[in-house]
Image (cartoon, rainbow, N blue to C red; front, side):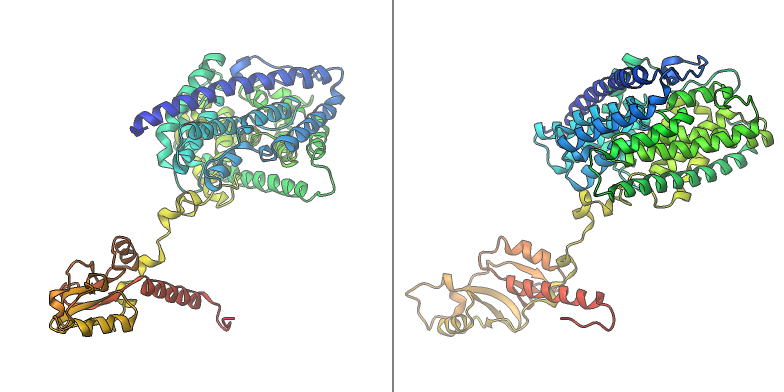
Length: 599
């Protein structure tokens, strides 16, 4: 495609269509598995998110076979373990990280079976009751299709990576009904401290198309519905003190989330004697055991967060009413248990996203700290604190604060909290430092294999020609007889000789330009040619090598930068090679530890 704008418009639309349709298919798959694995086996129906149920109060009903929840989640884990290990082991874990890894380390290549396998495995994980999110799988589904589209259009590695990034943004923007945040996320989530700006326009196109398709099915509303019973927004400057505190707590909670997740993940990776089929089942059973006492850890968890927004605190009180001291302890416990449940679900080599669980865990922590904060700052509502807490937590954990802030406003419709979100999320981001839930992220573009050649300066670019040229070059005067020139050329085993007068260039005599019936007493000036490349001594070996590619004599005359008729020397591939090797040896000597010797 000759027109870049037209190319990315077409590709963005195609990726967006698949992202939207894939999000619908994945959404329906989760609903189907939830009904036939969770609800049919256990009789338990968890609360729904606001996009489905609105603000309808939920009454906890555990069902007649609630004790079978460990069986439901464990069975789901076993099925997922078999599917993943038999078909696509790289689909394990949280899909967004795998897509990031494909961008940086695999030239954007994602196997074509991955989107289908990820859809099935993650739907079973979440639908059976596992604590996981749907954004990672959707991102990997759309990213996989982006890789496929790039192959269809015969894109190079650079454009394939851009298509994969656009898929990440379109998948997340669709499933979260947050097109702008999803588009920006695709550029920000690849790095800890940088952006992939080239992916922005394709991502915007793909994300808008995906949002339009998924929203047509679900309705163009927000994931969470904030009741309009009170004003939500930033109206009191002194509340910034509270939001600073929330940012600190969110940053610490993000660190707990990251450390717990990878601690449990590392534990399961070391269990070599346990079948890989059984690991997700073990993780599922553990999550099921937690859910017997705390059902809030089951599945996505959006419904529980929605109940917090609805003010249905009695749902969490375990029969103790609105005892705020007890609720504070319950919400603290729910935060830790949701983090642990997510870590066992995905870290046991299951399949699902880490975004949604982080939001839910953040909402529990927000509900906990809202109790003392509201007592001190009564003009800050619990809903406001919950929104800021959940966004700040994942903004710090993901190292994508700008995109997560925007997504938070799109998911909740609370644009009036933009300043508190900015403050708290920025603090959380700095508290987490270099730690991230996405281990495939790199610090910036200079650290990515995708941009390696853009930032790596070739060694030969830093070596001036004058340090490597042959200063004792072969030369002769223009009045000398041809016999003398021929003898010098043959004696030096080169193809030609520089003709000069008092160090000033006159021409070049190549052995190939000497006729067979040459008059050996004829002066060199009658046989020489001026047709040879010249280069100034301050240029680099890289420049000389590029010039030699088009020089039939295999030699370049090096001249003074201020007087380009004054010859300084000559350079050939032999001198370039020796100059390069000399620089390599010098670099090794410079980096060798003191006291060590070369072997």
